[in-house]
Length: 239
Image (cartoon, rainbow, N blue to C red; front, side):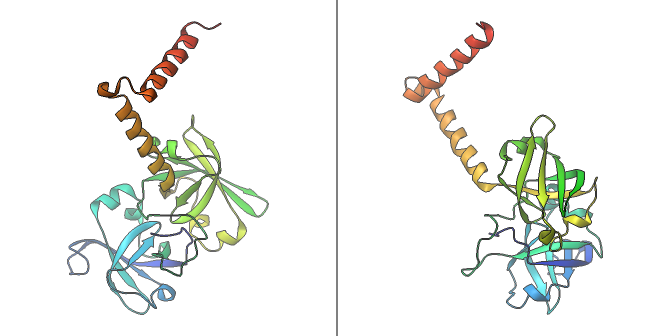
């Protein structure tokens, strides 16, 4: 679990598409340097979020650490576009002493989004994004939380028709995360708010249960049926 408050910007020392060492897991691995600040209490097996993606430390020294990257992770994130010299956002998993300055972040990236707009507003930057997978738009709401490349941010505008949303990044945050280094056309990792996903899952399950023919006489199913009939009647027979 993470908070979306980036602790440090690290640098990709190596992107290895076929790491046959034990720590590389015989697959893709990333080695991140300039990370000494977050490695003072590191242990093998610890979780570190790299651009918002929860990854497991398989090797480390005073300044660098290595993580393996699965094929599923490569499909869901933009980590496959990283190369030597790329800057990345880093955050250690929460501890008992962590203050939640951001919001509850799993480090499980849902999809990626493309930057389709970038404009200055006084000392802030307004970014506009379009999701690759539009089904996640339903979890993005005005003034809601969203995690972009591991950074906890607040949504300031949502256009469900255009499948876009906006965030504003203040000057202080610009100096602490990688997004200001990106331009229109670049991609970012997106984790939508966990609360929204849990709420949607509970409501969906409840509705499916109530709409089961075996529950035809339940008060909720009668209410839903009547509501649907009323809406259809208003659409088909407008007054």
